[in-house]
Amino acid sequence: MPASPSATPDHIKDVNTRYHDAAAESYDAKWGIDFSEIGQKQVELKAVKALGDLPAEPWGDALEIGAGTGYFSLNLAARGLIENLTATDISPGMLSSLSETADRIGVPVRTVVSEAEILPFDDHSFDIVLGHAVLHHIPDLERAFGEFFRVLRPGGLILFCGEPSRHGDRLAILPKWAGSVAAPAWRRLIRARALEHTEEELAEDEYNLEPEVDVHAFAPDDLKAIALRAGFTSTRVRGEELVANVWGWGLRSMEATAVPETVPVRWRNFAFKSYLSMQKIDTRVLEPRLPAELFYNLLLSARKGP
Image 1 (cartoon, rainbow, N blue to C red):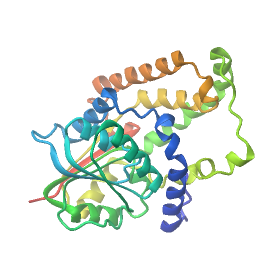
Image 2: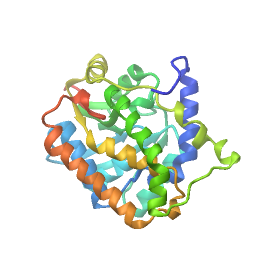
Image 3: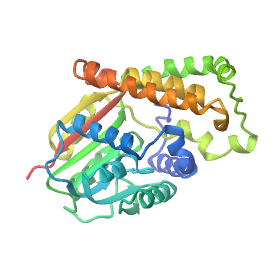
């Protein structure tokens, strides 16, 4: 991962706060985050993969860790899978964006600025603790998992998706490089203008802090061991997305070089639909047959005993 091994926990938290505050306004557009039926189906499928099945009844009190702009929890709530949602994040800017989206789509939510290692909630407050692409940002995972265990009620679940695997993290290097090499020809083909940042933009946190925000990549056994040490049982780790992420990173690397307003809608539709097609190949063909460690993302679920 990019962050320096010598970076202190306080430095990592400060960098993550500043970067995500700066990125909050454009985050959904950058990563193609969707809150329509498509986004709801995506997160529901992730939950099914991680858990094996969905609960017969909605989760009552849910706590999201590192909620960001709300992709995971808001879509689950809009899907009717969460009754009462509390969203936390170290970044106030991200939670502000989440609240705006929640109001727009009609999902009630309580937001709390908090770091994962010190949760400001009573013991046994929640039925599920969940998150998406957050564990790899947390400096002290042992302490964080201890907090997840503490705030869960007996029989409660943890559900974390979108965590980078070590293999997947290395695999992404190739399509990122290929996308950057192909970008000039791609821009000429679709008649998009090259994006040139000013010195002021390059000095902003959104640009110069991105290489420092990620601190972990995982092997499946790593995640299982952390959960087990915290006291969880019924631990389950699955892999998700291989060809979809190779394809997606190539597309994102090209698109990042163009002025967004000059990228045609027809291209955006093609990119999004082709990415969804690659996801189907992963879901139907590769994920049921290949070991979890080969995939780009890992999904973790576990239970707190009665």
